[in-house]
Image (cartoon, rainbow, N blue to C red; front, top):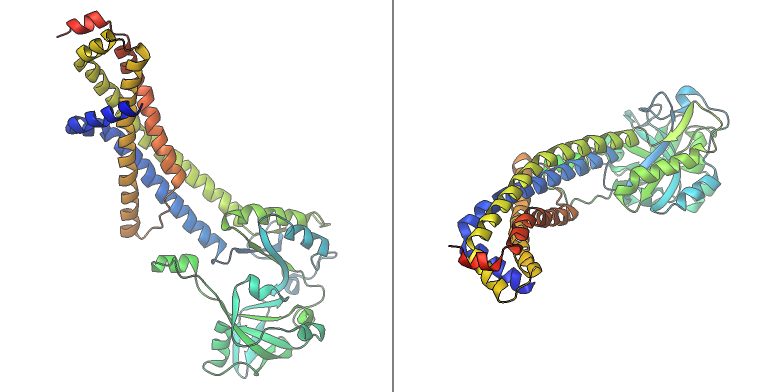
Length: 416
C-alpha cells in the first residue's frame, strides 16, 4: 500500500499539468463547501450571540401570557395571578440538578413601572430584587462600596446597589456610595456600585462589539427580602439560569421552563425564555436549508471532478497497458493491479481535497475580513470533506481499476 501511494504521488508530480486539471473540479467543490460552511456557521454563531445577549451564558425565564411573548408578565401593571408568586424550592432544586446548568437563581424584576431619583435627577431602568448569588451569576463586580451582607437580608435593610450606568446618570462624577436614592415611595442608601465583567478578547470590530456586548443598561438592585418596599409580596419571580456551555442554552432553558410550568394551575400563562426558542429554531431551519442548497450546488463540482478523474484514469490505463501486461506476466494478481490504480485515483482526489480545504479556509477568512463577517472553521466539515473526496476517488476510480485488472497479459504485451 505504501509503495502504491509513493508511485501515485510520483505520477502526480511527473504529470503536473494533467494532475492539476484533473483535480480542479475536486478542488473547487471542496473549497466551496468549506467556505460556505465556515460563513454559515460563523453567521449563525453571531446571530445566536445576538439573540442570547452578552458572554455570560445566562438567560432569563419569566412568566408570559401565551398570546404575548414580547413582554414578561408584570404584576404591578396587570395585577397578581392567584397561586403564582415565588418559585417553589423543589422546582428550583430540580432545575439546579440539570446537567449543564451551572446555577439557577430566582429574582424579582421590574422594567417599566419603576424609576429612581436623586435630588432632581430621575432615571428609568430595570429594578431587581436579588439574592446573594445574583452578582456572581451575572458577572457583576464591585467598582466601589460593598455587596449586600447577610444582615441586609435578615433585617430587610433599605439598601441599594447601582450599576455603573445608573450611578453615572444619577451622580455624574460624584461618589454614589452613602447617598440616598428614592425608589418608588421609599428611600434607599447606596452601598455599592457594580459593573459588568466582560470578555473583550474576541472583539475585533464594531460589529462584534454591538453583537456580543451591546449597550449597557441602567439597573439597580435591592435585597430580595426588601422587595415588598419596591413591589409586593405577591409579585411574580423570574429565574436566571447560568450554563456551562452557550450551545445548551435553548435546550436547557426549555427543560427548566417545563419544570416550572408543571406546577402551574393556569392555561393562560406559562414560564418561557420569551421568543428565544422560536428564534433559535427558525434560525436553525433557515441556515440548515441554506446549507443544504449551497452545498448541493457545490457538490456538482465534485461530480464533475469525479468524472474528470474517471476519464484521466481510463487514459492512464490505456497508456500503461504494456506495463500492466508485464506485471501480470510476472505473476501480479488481479487484486494487486486493481488496488494500484484505485490507490492512484484516491490519492489524486485526496490531494485535491486537501488543497480545496486550504483554499476554502483562505477564501472564508478573506470574505470575513472584507465583509466584516464572523467566520467559524468547522473541523468536522474539514474531515468530512477530505473523506468525501477520497470516496469520490474510490467511486470514480473503480471502473478504470477493474478494467486494468481484467486486461489479458498477452494482449497487453502486444499493445502498441
